[in-house]
Each structure stands twice: as C-alpha cells, then as structure tokens.
Length: 244
Length: 244
Image (cartoon, rainbow over all chains, first blue to last red; front, side, top):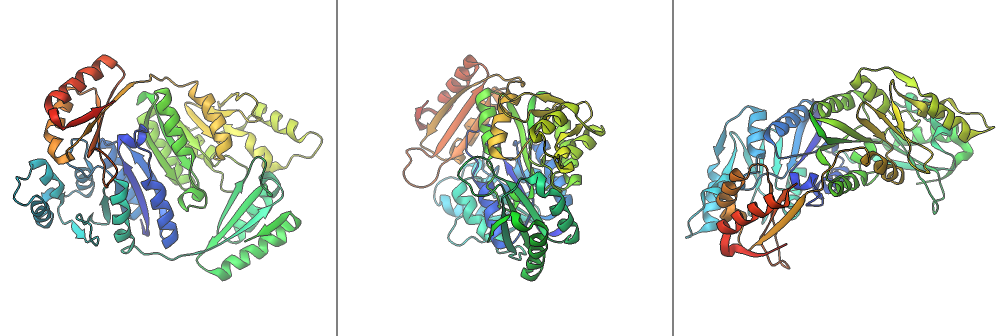
C-alpha cells in the first residue's frame, strides 16, 4: 500500500450513460497535480453496491487514501456509505453531529426520514469542516466520501487536499522533430539509467505544430531533472527543437 | 459476464498527472451512449503492467468487451499489448499483416526495431480495418487496443462501435420544484415497482435554474418509460414543473 498516494472513485450511472458530463475527475486530477499529490488511478463505476465494494477494496490494496465522488444523497441509488462501510468492515451508524446539522437546517419543519439518511456514515467516521459549507467532508479510515454535485465536490476537495501529503515536483519538456520510433531506443536507455525519473513521450499529429514528439521529464528534485535532461540532450542531439 | 456491455481502460501516467487533459474517456462515454451500447465502467490507470493486468482481469469478469486507450506505441512505457496478452494468457507474437504495413510505410528506409514493436499483438489477434487510417484496430478476444492519441482514438473507435451490440433507448426527464430528500420516498417506491427502468436523480444548486431536481427515466421500450413516468406523475403531482 502506498501511504502517500490517492485512488479516486467516481460513482454514478449518470456519468457512464452521459446524462451528466463528468467534471469532477478532471478537476481532481488537476488539483492533485498542482498540490504534488500522487494519483494512482481513477475509476468511474455504476452505483451497484457489489461493483463498488470490489473497486474500493482493489483501491485500498494500492493506496492509503481514496476519494469518492457521488452516491451520498438521500435517494435509492445512493450506495456509497454502505459500500465504504462494507469495504472497511464497519457497520453504518447515524452520526450525531451530522444529524444535529440536518435537524438544525429543517428548524421547525418535520425532517423527512430520507434526509436523515444523509447523517449516516461508517462507524468511526470523522467530519472535516469545509468553511461556510453546510456539509462537512465525511471521512473514514482514509476514505473521503464527497458529493457528486460539482459545486460541492470542488469545495469539499480543498478541505481534503489540506490533509494529504504532497511534494510539488519539477517538470521539464523537450520538443522533438522526429517520431517516437526514431527516439525509442535512446529514450529507453536514458530511462533505464535514471530509474526514479518519470519520463513521458507524447506524439502529436496533424498540421499546426512545430514538433512531432513532446518528452516530459519529472522528479521531486530539480537537480535530478537537470541530469536526466542533459542525458537526453546528449542522446537526442539535433532532434531537439526547443525545451521548456 | 455481461455479453452486451463494455468496460473502458484509459492507460497512461500522462493522464493521471494532468500532463495531458484526458479526452478519450468523455468521447467514448458519449459515443457509446449515442449507439445504445452499455458501459459498465471506465478506469484510468498508470502504465504499470501489474496494475494493468489486475484491472483488465477485473473488467473481463464483468463484460465481454474491453476498449483500451493508450500504451500501444513503440516506447518503454507502452505496456498494453503485453498486459492484454498476460490477461488472456496468450503469448505476444509479431503479426505478419501489421509488420507488412509498417515495412511498407518505411519503404526503402531501414525500419527501426522499435517501430516493429508496433507489429506485436497477443496471439490470435485480428486487425479491423479503419478506412483510410494507416493503422487498423488491434483486437483479441473482445479486447480492442486503441491508441491514446485522440485523433487516432476517435477514428478507431468508430470501427469498434460498428462491431458492438447496441439498442438506443428512450430517455425522458422530469424537472421538480422540490429537493431530493422530499421526493426520495416516492421515487424509491416507483423504482421498486419498475425494477427494469433506470431512474436517475440529479439535484441542481445555485441561481439561474427553474428546478431543484431533474429526474431521468430510461428503458429500451418507450411504452415502459411512459408507464414509469405516469407512476412518477401520480406520486409527485404538483412538484413537477415540466418534462421533456
């Protein structure tokens, strides 16, 4: 299990059937990157409890932290809390602090029993305050259960990020005049010599671009990145058009 | 295993580290929806062969068809073919038809050994022609291995869709003046009475909208959808602002 990394699970048939354009995944990927938090994988799954437990268990074997999006409302297809509880082998309980918040929101009005379902969480859950937002983040054992509504997801995600370990890294890029096949041997050699550096190779197609391949070189240390870039410059020579 | 459904696996560190904005997943979701092809799940994973085999095997237990995006080029991080071969328990072989295409492209020029890596596939693979595109779709046992470059992915995806079973369904929507908690009991009741209909419930937040919840009702049969909509209208009455 990687104790610094995150898996993300986006829950909901609406995403997979294109009834809603999925926005939370892309936002999460960008924000984790900006904070230097490692993302292991993103999974978009239906709100079927068995499928959800299976993927949550698989994520749990990989990373200490899981961020889920969706399936936390009061309707029949909101299965996230139950699935997380099953995965963590904990019972679902009503959380007194959440219940008090919901009752306070309804005030004098009767509280529908379905609204109180939103006060449920796996036993041992903690609530992370989110500034002015009425709903805190529900967290249990490293699993953060966020709502799927993008406006709420974004606000709650910031509260989660503040709790995760991150190290913003150094990224440099080389732009090449030749195709991937022509540089593959040289790139493989440099990648083997610099095993801790993350190399990426992205071909471009079509008109309107000055390069055929963009290489990315990334590591927490700028000195290490400089070394790997120098090795690539030595290996690729005049194929390099520019760098940034 | 669902013999009509698809799982999608988007491969590549570049996606998870936001070096590339992921576009193929959203495009695939939309096109499958338009063709009425059922999508079970979408997974974005790193190009680590063990992780990839694990998720491919999990997808294979769910659905007959898997569409992968990325990891099929000639560089060190292109592990898709090997991962698919391991999952299907087949050896990787050089496909004569692909080799001939690559040699023809290079013509008189020497062919780099790395370019020939793109002629490899799991034993028993078939090649599906893609019109004018130089590269056909590589397919083995229901797994379609598409390139991650969006322009190529889009073209190849159309060739894949033509091979998959689809039934465009009927979708209707109801717009409500009340929140999810207030309709949850009624919606649960109707959903239990119409178990084959797919119901969705999507709250909206903020100004500039005339409704608080949008309900979606979906099934292959328009008559079934009409019945479920009538049941919802009876249950929700004056909360319904409009429908489409």
